[in-house]
Amino acid sequence: MLASLRRDFHAQASPERALASQRYFKTGPGQYGEGDKFLGLTVPQTRSFLPRTDALAEADIVTLLHSEWHEERLLALLALVRRFEKARRDEAARQRIVTLYLANTRWINNWDLVDTSAPQILGGWLLDRDRSLLGKLARSPGLWERRIAVLATLNFIRAGQFNDTLDLCRQLLSDRHDLVHKACGWMLREVGNRDESALIGFLDVHAAELPRTMLRYAIEKLSPARRQHYMR
Image (tube, rainbow, N blue to C red; front, side, top):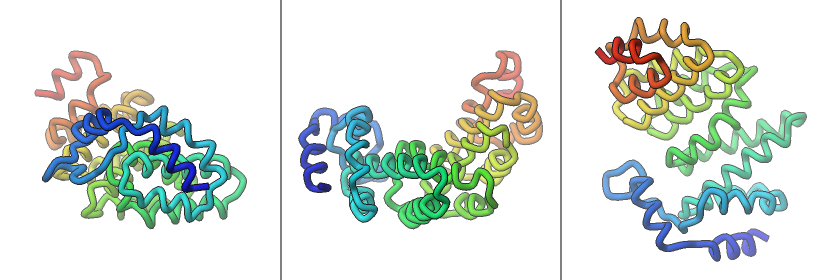
């Protein structure tokens, strides 16, 4: 079953789109996606295979997640999200998915892979649980684990809970990577979309310390006067 899925999946490949994806996801030497390989499928094409993953064993999902092909890893993560969301009343199944997810972060190795899975799986699991794990991930030497920590809090923000996002952004003020700055700025903007006073309170204390990318993302939805104030 996995073999036939992969055969049909690869039949959708586009060498021209693959080249464009390699440029877009920065796969060149020294770039954050160095060495990643693409088949050249669009996200809608990848998602169209999701119903077929329901028949796969968990080991088959792990095989896809360990693939050299970016789109197969994306399909695996989307399949895990799908299974996690379907298992709303099965805590053991959800915990198994979260454990698998955390054991395989080395293959969740580009921003789109993080962003389509961390809020739903890790954020969904931790919504009503202890969240100290996020602080450990935020201290990881691995770029993608740090981004996973930040993106997981999107689920909390949607539930009106902002403290973990603000704490992680404070922790990551000195992070060196632009993709962490963007993630933090995005989550701060999401906080501001729901409670502008919470964002303003954070910025009034920390704006001068924020990396410029993080600051620009965070203030994007504020009034022009406020944006100018914080940029100064």
